[in-house]
Image 1 (tube, rainbow, N blue to C red):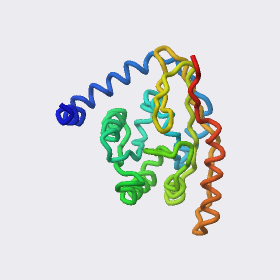
Image 2: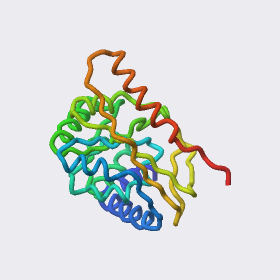
Image 3: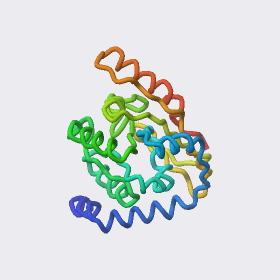
Image 4: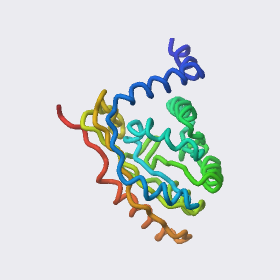
Length: 220
């Protein structure tokens, strides 16, 4: 039974169903977007932008992020079974899925991300994914920003009502008709460096900025 289900969720038909379900479900959200114009203007003026979010936050932004499909953006997604589902939805949302993670295929995936970010000028990165630890920014986002000469834009989502999973990051999904807020932080530009201490200080700086935005499960 498990083998059959695993085969089913890998099919294009299932990915299409999941994509349409998420679109329909997300259409019930009452979304408010904050601080988007600055980085959009920067992008239109020739800059390169790397949107960065916690793994916990990404579901809430899926529908809105379809608005960026004309930029041909990219997103690094793990080669796991869960990653295959996410990649199927991402591709149908207009995002190019680059498969790989720190645990499998990371170097090649990072190289492809750099190439696409240089060419198309927009990409996104889940800073603590795919397996955490939660709230710890991994080095790949800094390497990617350096190599592509891109600014980093933190992205945060929140919902007034949501279900929280008992996962490593307390992943949350807004409830139907929830008020969802998508907020973009200020542009961050790091100077490329080969000094390990400076590199680590940049990683910690980004982590310090983003850490207060991790959501905690509310008691209802």
